[in-house]
Image 1 (cartoon, helix red, strand yellow):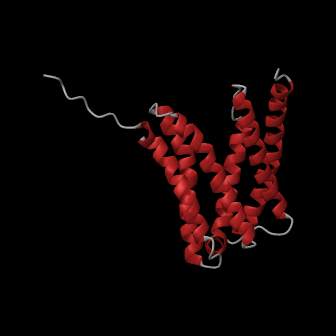
Image 2 (cartoon, rainbow, N blue to C red):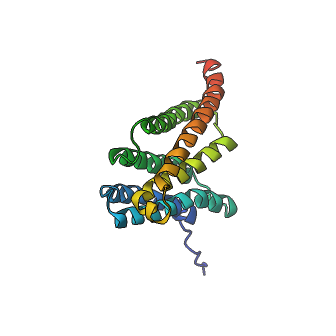
Image 3 (spheres, rainbow, N blue to C red):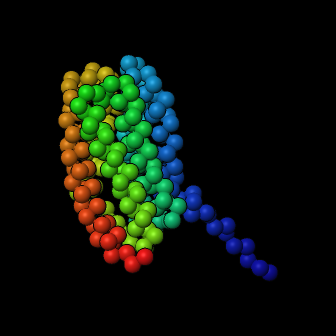
Length: 199
């Protein structure tokens, strides 16, 4: 009599990937809530969702490493989820003038760097060359997420902590400065492989 083997769960639905899916789902919800920028309730809910999404950015990697749940799907979706979350928030915050004036340049720098690094990674992948995340890049991501958290809170945050938006803008500029630094580092590392590509 053959033993009935337990059905193996698809790695697509492991905990690490589910956390990433949650971050992807949070993007359209955040966009919808930020369509009411003057609503304290909408801003408060948006802030809670953003914080939860930002936390999963750390947790999915931790879970994947700790419980050996790393997968090709997760490695593909994780950076996509991060970039969608950041890009959507920056665009919505610029649209409602939370990010305005010269601060728009900080948002542009961050968005342009994301496009640059994504394109560079795609090209280097063809050469079977990885582009590891540097320690400074991790700091950049942390500062960027904290800045966006303050800015997403906006008017709702001002009730609890006066100056919330000013803090958010200051941190956004710091994130932009770190973005330029890490972007230069990645570009310098990538150009070496591009120049020496024998094709």
